[in-house]
Image (cartoon, rainbow, N blue to C red; front, top):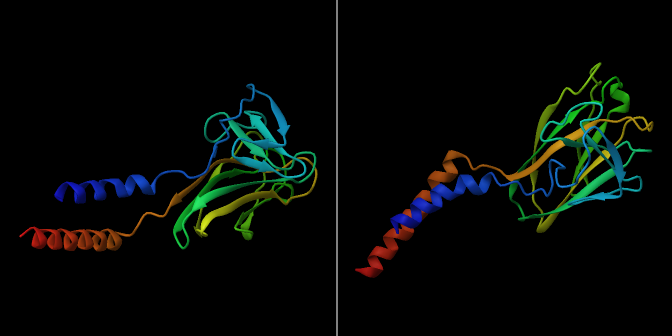
Length: 198
């Protein structure tokens, strides 16, 4: 029983850190160094009417790995992914965002949607050269079975938009009180098991 309790306590932080997003850093799709292309879809992601622009260190370096995406392709576009979630479970959604180099904030907007509800618009002016990545973290709640995550370009429709990388969804790490409550519950199970044995 003690082994079970120890294993449960050790496994809890590991489970909390698993990224549920498929291809969150866009490295699953091959793009030659220093090039870009527009694809209808990427591994794990469904593109909108105007596809998804995948870049390999073009107009800035990736935040994680070598690839990142831009959603103002030939026109403002979007991408979405269905992710397995538990009803009522708290999750942390994070992503790296940067305005495109030399482009105003008005053209760099990306709106984030969770289960169809806007989680905000992220926009910033681009640096004179390269990226100025910022990581944003949002708290979201899971729906039964699966939840929908979407990113949409909402800036000026001019084929120059914000950059996105390192998309991650993880179960929210429980507060210390939650761990204490879990430990108390496991201890109670242990006491019941001992009494039955006796």
